Each structure stands twice: as structure tokens, then as C-alpha cells.
Image 1 (spheres, rainbow, N blue to C red):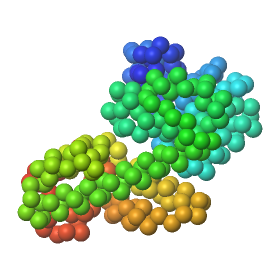
Image 2: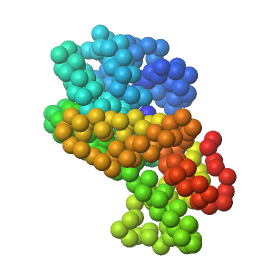
Image 3: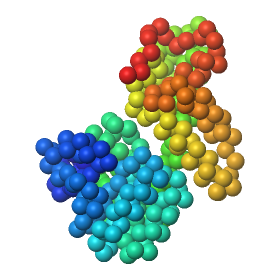
Image 4: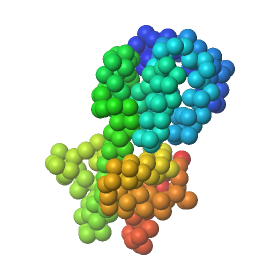
Length: 282
């Protein structure tokens, strides 16, 4: 994402909790900072991409005294809606602006600058960064602050559920005597077509569980979805079941790709295993 901003001609100062990760981008033109305060000092726009809401809150509080008046903070992390709304309130009270803009598209989308970017903001704040976000992907304003996280949770709900259904479809195809790879090819282009069928269907057939999106991240997202549903007074029975399926992998495969939903399904069906190759986990 930083490389995309640099290619678009932006001046980018960077900071990472693991300093060595920031240093590797110096040759690309980014300017590593030794502290959060140094990174945000004099910045018109601050972009954060962190592990989870509590880490975002910690970094934001550390950076807050160094922000100049009217700075706009864009958090592209995946957090709870309530956390994003609190970040907005904190920054607004200090005279700054906030946008929650989580992304979907994985490492490939980040490298290609084709991420789906879901922004929660006022129209005026969004207008300040629309062009900047467009350097990293396809931004869409989806509502007020906090709405970006709702959109990301809807995305992850569909992703998590579809991965589990796809695992069931492929395992059923093989168990019932069909060629699972041929079945996947046959349904491509029909109503079941999706990026998940294209990418993760092949991953499952190859038993390639080297992490893109991790099981532990998917579990975090599923819990955030259920928290948002509770706040909105909505019951999501399928989401509850999908969450349970991923939780069975929490201890054994927390850093595997979320396509490891297949492994959880196979554990329910002793003796059945998709394909013949070894599991690729690292």
C-alpha cells in the first residue's frame, strides 16, 4: 500500500512497531520515523493499518499530542464499529477528523493497488482523501464514521461463510464419486462463480493453506460481526455457525490461511480428505 502511494507521487513518512519493517521501504522512497510522534508531525493525512482496535487506540493516543490542527486520520485496520466510532469522537474532540476505511483484496490487491476500500466518513472529509485512497484501490463512501467497518464486516461475513460452503461442496463432490477439480471447473461462470471459488477453491484442491488471510484474523472478524449484530439487534444464525467452525481451528491452525475451513470440515468427516497432496502450511 505504501509503494502504491509512492508510485502515485505522494511523500510518505512511515512508522512501524517493528522498526525493521519500516526500514525496508527506505529504498522505495519512504521516510522511516523513529517514533509515532515524528511520523505524524506536520502530516495533513495520517493512515494507520494495524492488527486490531486496541492497538489502533494505543497508537492513536500516543500520536494525538503531535497531530497538527485539522489533521485527518484514516484508519484502514479492521476494527469493531464501536471502536471506529470512539476513534472518531476522540479525534473530533481534539479538533481533528477521522475516517474508517478498512480494505478487502488481500496481499495481491494491496500490491496491485486494487483493494476494495470501504470508507465511513462525512462527505467533506471523504473528499479530502478520495484521490489518495484511489492510489491504493477502489474507495467507496458507505456512510458515516463507523460504516466502513460495517461494510468490511459484511464482506468478511460473506467470505467466511462462502469458504465453509465451498469446502463442503468440494468434499461432497469427491465423496460422491465426482472429480472435485472438474466440478469446480464446471460451475465456474455460473451463479456460484466468485473470487473465492476462483482463488480459494484452487487453494483447497491444492491443499495450500499458506497464509494470506489468517484463521485468527477471520475469527476476530467473525466475533466483530456478531458484536455488530448484537448492537443492531439482529440474529445471524449462519454467522454463529461459521464462527464456531473457525473456532475449532484456533488452537491447531491459527496462522493458516482461512481456506483451512476445509480442515475443520474434514475433522467432522473422519476418513474423507480432499485431494491426495500434502498440506502446505508454511
